Picture: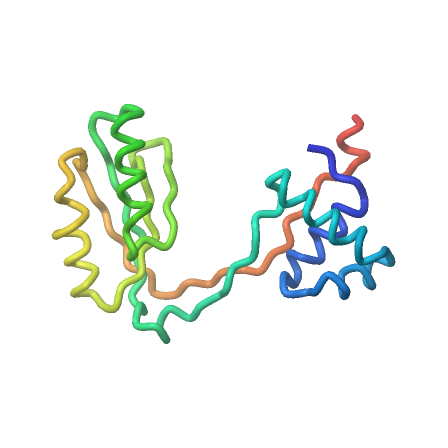
Amino acid sequence: MELDELDTALLTLLQEDARLTNKELAARLHVAQSTCLERIRRLTKRGILRGQRADIDLRKIGRGTQALVAVQLRPPDRTVIDSFQAFVADLPEVLSYFVMSGSDDFLLHVAVADNDQLSAFILDRLTQRREIVHVRTSVIFSHVQRSVVVPLPDDSAQAR
């Protein structure tokens, strides 16, 4: 998908501070507010700009224990993968998950109140699924989420 200079500048500013108003964005980019709003709508419609998210301190809402849970499934076919993915997508403990290749099929990032809840999640909910053949849990001591602006494609590089 081609991005022009204005699209790239908008996406860069929004990555730096997604709470900027349309008026602030337009002023920084020296364009009309209507132009800015239309570009944001177009980027959203194209699926490039997918929204904003709140950064919540999990400890302060009673979910201070986090873990990465690696899961192996058998048989490793599309039906099993799709079914398990639908299952984990509805679990409130699961913050995010990755569908992977290699020895593990899924990596779940979970947040719960404490180790007892983590144990209950693994033993009482997760491993009750018949397709699971192996689970490996790693407790997260510290989670640092970097605020990094993703470099956007350079138009001159696309032309090559």
